[in-house]
Image 1 (cartoon, rainbow, N blue to C red):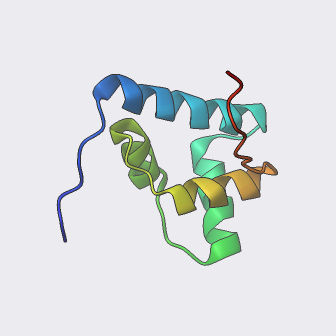
Image 2: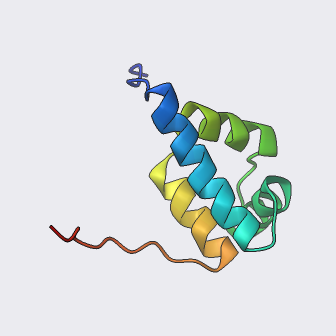
Length: 82
């Protein structure tokens, strides 16, 4: 498996903060969210694995989409205003 480029530490923290903000905003925590994720999608993620992925800034986008889904969010891409 090829080695992934590492994300700068500050950017990794921003990714982690942003996702955890939405988890908290949905009235949940990482453990409960991952339990829901595993139930809905038949996966076997652990809160520790997902927390590590968040801290390293290398969580797969498909997993972010699934987390958003179990929390009742959808991710929308919008063109930035100039």
